[in-house]
Length: 417
Image 1 (cartoon, rainbow, N blue to C red):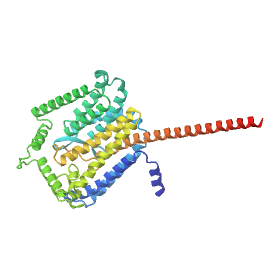
Image 2: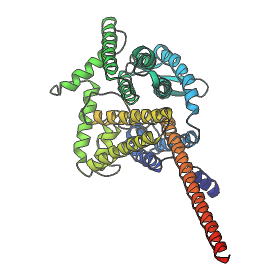
Image 3: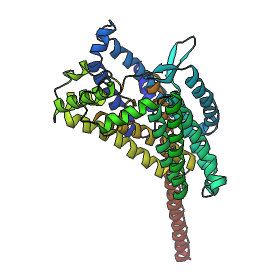
Image 4: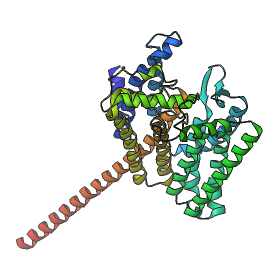
């Protein structure tokens, strides 16, 4: 057992800081989930440690996924991205038609035999960013051209976002914004990005209008959430979103600077989803503003280390993979925390690697594993370059020493004569 663990540690490569961030986030997840699922366990007639044990297994498998994915040469994902993207489209369509309804939207599908439910949007996000990294790499020579460069990367993004939006608008908007950042880094012209913003706004308006007129879709939910966000004075609202926001505010106010202490949250008994959408509010209540700031800094540290990988990677595909996957993960985290402190309307996005989950954590683990795979390759390449430079320096020194010996020997020969 000990030898096996040592072997795993010696074969673990990539950015050590990112590994540390992932482990710390996983530990925070266990503390927060155990604390926030007491009421859920009581309602579901489960043991108090049931959901903790479940989260331990989910995170354990997630860390194994990170480990095995980071061992794969990241260049293989260029080919796999095509298959993953083509698979994601019919799955999104299937989810819209036959998916399990949650909060008036179809977001989940259940896999037969194993009875595992997962959000197809999680797979679609991962597939889209891998596919866009590939396309941006291929189109770098013509990326400034609207028809030859921009359209081939724009269409896949619009298609995926359009299929996600009817059931999960917040994810679609987040995906579109993150893709725009990726396009900017990929040297897409600014005027084309402005076109993207206008096209996205027009598509959103069309979808909202059709849903409003036909009654099909979630237009009423979107409209209500925006109104609830801007009408804080309406204290008599019976909507769950308003109730959740109010309870989250109370939790944050209770936390103060240092918090009430681990497991001592009061609002976890009133918030409908304290273990997923509003887990950040529970963290602040128990660990205070200092604890909440620490979590924010962990995500920013992850982003910073990923940007360093992007800058060090000499090949476009690896650089785009690292920045695209890390930006979407951190962007989702920031949106979730912004909802918890009432900076944006309620979205339903979870906190990556902290909120209780299953498939969402595993897809996030795949993304982190890919980022670490790029980091591993960069480290190995830099190590080989340094080793080659060192060998070249040693060879040059040996050659210089040999030439000096020859010169000295020749001088001695002259003196003897």
